[in-house]
Image 1 (cartoon, rainbow, N blue to C red):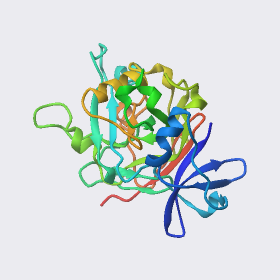
Image 2 (image 1 turned 135 degrees about the horizontal axis):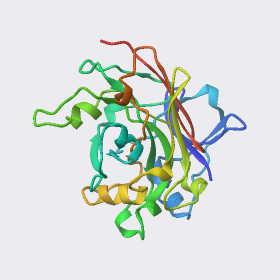
Image 3 (image 1 turned 135 degrees about the vertical axis):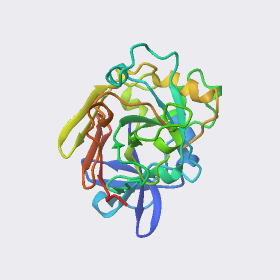
Image 4 (image 1 turned 180 degrees about the vertical axis):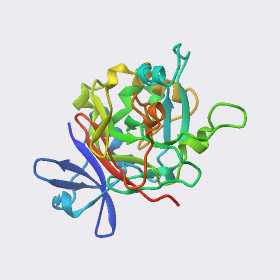
Length: 279
């Protein structure tokens, strides 16, 4: 088991293996797309490059590659749907694609988009794909390298002219979706299959969300099957798996400029960001 981070040091971006106890990161050769498939299958590990660096001397970046596709699914925790007034389980999840421009890393300032006055938070387990061809595997999670923390920040006041929500306006917000701080490999969660780990989120130190990923209506394999029926996924791609109850849409307590958000997932870590000013 290991924690893998994307980072920048002295103007150069690289990947590395994190040693939290030592406060260090060991740079490795190449990109996630180079060594990700072998590491995911258990037939190889990244090659160290140079000496370890102090974590305090590097800038952690979101765990993205130059070719990452970011997809998400919603309506995946019943407690969340119930508090939004849903009375029957939906027949399936619903998906969306996020642009790379929406993604920011740990400790980066979160933009407050001009199109909304109802900016909301959503802590989510994010699956990081490592395999080149998930369709060739017995189950989709066999192709998952590991998991990271996501905060699927959403604009709640973006209605569609045809009814319901305009998912593009709701989810594709420039520099408003934090991901990180690193990827914890799936063996930390028992390997392939559904992880059972705690997720929670705090705003200015106040807990707003708490649940376990075993509460998902559709498990990670089913979420991946939904996506793979529509588009392929490969090394470095990300899947947001939905959020639980406690979001601002339930009680009207939306994010404000200056708010500090801490999204935390057991066995991964804390993703901390501050909301920037309104334009």
